[in-house]
Image 1 (cartoon, rainbow, N blue to C red):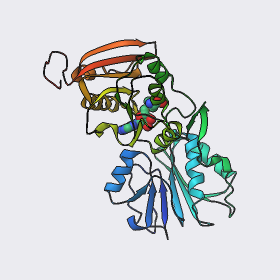
Image 2: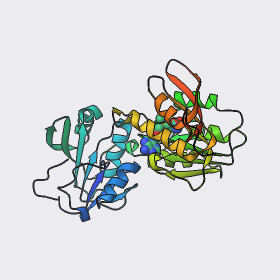
Image 3: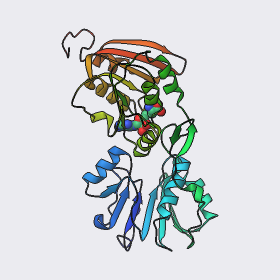
Image 4: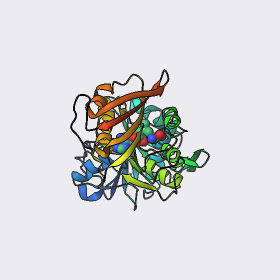
Length: 329
Ligand SMILES: C[S@@+](CC[C@H](N)C(=O)[O-])C[C@H]1O[C@@H](n2cnc3c(N)ncnc32)[C@H](O)[C@@H]1O
């Protein structure tokens, strides 16, 4: 993170996209506002005493944008932060090489004054001073865009350009009639949940999603009153009553790192939310080793379809892992 030589820069400071464990020590907690829509990071920053919100409110005397992996989202973060700055205020950009900091720097050099370019281990930090009239292309701002008939997404959300092929395959393997109470863990912008809602049987579906922008898109995409939206961490998500169906296409990356533990935690949550007779349908990349985790939580695990890239799994008997006859009825 930035080392401001004279401590907190003067005035109100905005940080966009800081992660839960980022070192923000140069900044004065009371004069800093953080925008972060990813639930686990949002909670972690709030627990450290920062003022965190999912949207940017107010005007600022300076800002720092932490670049995400998606270029469109990077541009949107920069443009949305710039729109909140008082004229002439500095905008710092902090990015990893792997997140395309060099190409953003090149792009911004054509649009604004750049100085204070510092290289760090795996990236760069630099300062932009925008012209008084801002100068950034208006299309950089974050806005919903339609990627399939009736479905919008926002920059940076999972599969922002269209329907994920894994989810499309899972939808093909859902039964003709669904259980009455279903949870979609990691619901993204809602395409899979919408397919579930189109089948008979379903009375309520809970869409659980950590990315606020994805969940906001899901709200735009689904107006069915049977849908309930939860901005939450699927790993510790609970409901007052068990459900009899879970569908999911769990994430297997955290940032750039493959993280099968995340998928394993989703499987544990699915088992916790389901009745013993309830059923889980999930899709995963074929190479991911979820079999042991599934066998640890469900009595019966069956591969019901797939191709060279994906496998579709149905599991039932939550809480009664193979060889153990205990668990919920
Ligand atoms: C592989 S995508 C599937 C999205 C959606 N079901 C679809 O079909 O397009 C996984 C989703 O899980 C979300 N996610 C990641 N970590 C999460 C967490 N801890 N809790 C809830 N959702 C999470 C991601 O933001 C992403 O939208």
